[in-house]
Image (cartoon, rainbow over all chains, first blue to last red; front, side, top):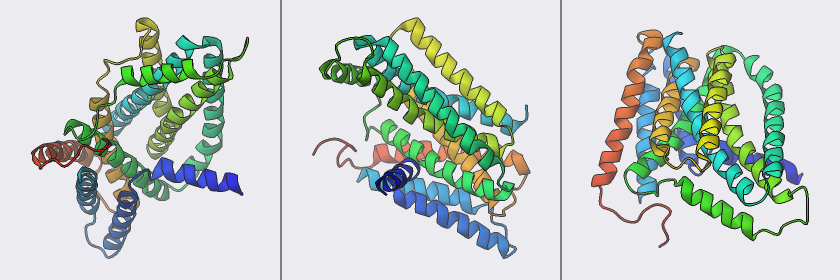
Amino acid sequence: MSWIVRAVRAAWEFVVGDDPFTALGVVVALGATAAIGGAGAPAWWVMPVAAVALLGLSLRRAAR
Amino acid sequence: MSGPEVGLAVSVFFACAVEAVEALTIVMAVGVTRSWRSALLGVGAAILALAVIVAALGPAITALPIDALRVIVGGLLLVFGLQWLRKAVLRYAGLKALHDEDKAFASETDAARAAARAGNGFDGYSFTIAFKGVLLEGLEVVFIVLTFGASQHNIGLAAAAAAVAVAVVVLAGVIVRAPLARVPENTMKFFVGVMLTSFGVFWGAEGAGASWPGGDAALLVIIPGAALAALGMVRWLRRAPRHQAVGEPA
């Protein structure tokens, strides 16, 4: 069992790293894009806005 | 080559070059101080392990439907890209120490000299350190090659760009016989962060069902837009009141 836990931890560390809020924000932004696009409205702008906002918030947390 | 293919090749080349510089520093440190033969055996074993991972994951990734692939790949690239950009911006703003290959090399050689040495022949320390270094840096290369390649249906081009990057770095290391300290690593990381973020934004939105105005040409706006936004944040952080550099002791 322990090797599974180690593998999951290593995968988490590899993908998410030390900033889980950014990873969560990306998932939320993808969901919002799908929801807005599914409702028939233009959704291309969501990801660029989310990327800039997530980088800014991540930098603000790191710089504190 | 089309615009996105050029973007793919350039992004993969620089991302892989950065990882190769870091792996080269580790291998050279144990090779110079302990055993080149064991270090190179470690490199060979790591390359073999990476080949197995590519053989196992490659077909599975390319078998996914394109929209699902682009959502997953776009999301992962965006997470990776934002992490690279964050570190590069913090370094440019003076809030995080610049990565110094000379310092990393000195630290690795000190550790290698201090480690217990086997009597003769095979050196387990050199093998293990070289193996781990190449495997960990190589995993990121594999991830970038597979995700970029699969999303563009061109794993061959991505693999070729990665191979050229590794060959250039190794050749440079052999010629100078020292860690590549003069490589502008933070600039390369900034550039790669911009490219990963841009492709992540582009593919993520497409995979989630959005249509870009102008199709693939939207990348010509997204890439400079991401670079400008990140440079603006460097400026913002430089002007912000300083508390304490990230990673520095209290």
